Amino acid sequence: MKHTTEVMITAEEIDQKLDILAEQINAHYADSDRLLMVGLLKGSVVFMADLCRRIKGHVEIDFMSVSSYGNEMTSSRDVKILKDVQSEIQGRDVLIVEDLIDSGNTLNKVREILMIREPKSLALCTLLDKPERREVDVPVDFIGFTIPDEFIVGYGIDYAEQYRNLPYIAKVVPLED
Ligand code: PRP
Ligand code: MN
Ligand code: MG
View 1: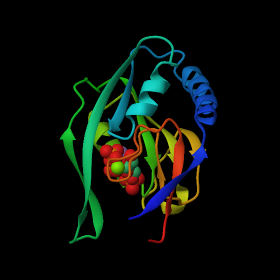
View 2: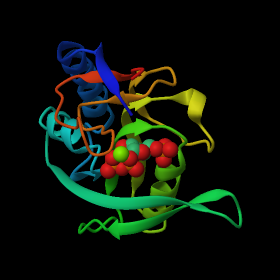
View 3: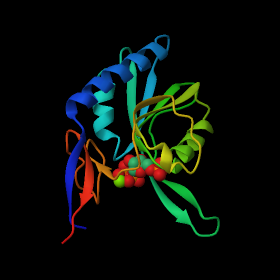
């Protein structure tokens, strides 16, 4: 598809939002020891890198990679683990770090998978939330920006694997050819 990109959220705006999110997260986990931040590959990598550097105390990071695919029988979406976390989850405060919640399917399944391992607590942080697109309800504890249903890229988020390296969030605008 021929397209162009248009800045939607600048690097400065992201930076300011991360300070606010980190303040909330630091306050929430003030009494926690060994907080484990779990990012979902690949989209969360940039956000995780910037967010974890603002978190105080003993913090560990780990990553999971899951793939979501349609299930024709139930018309729901299944999520398969491609790479699991290496960390022990049981008894720990776990914070899932995501770049974007769209339908909610990915986070809903990842939440289920991690809950079975009996963390002390499990919370969710997303930089971007598109509530209009939600198919399954997921409780989100920390939200950066609530955005309309636009096709976006940048700051970790891709369009056919491109644009993850943009330091800002951009809108993809289709062009006539
Ligand atoms: C994107 C995004 C979220 C997920 C949100 O990841 O990074 O992880 O989709 O969609 P959902 O709420 O409808 O499940 P994607 O599957 O494109 O993988 P990527 O992070 O490697 O780009
Ligand atoms: Mn993703
Ligand atoms: Mg993607």
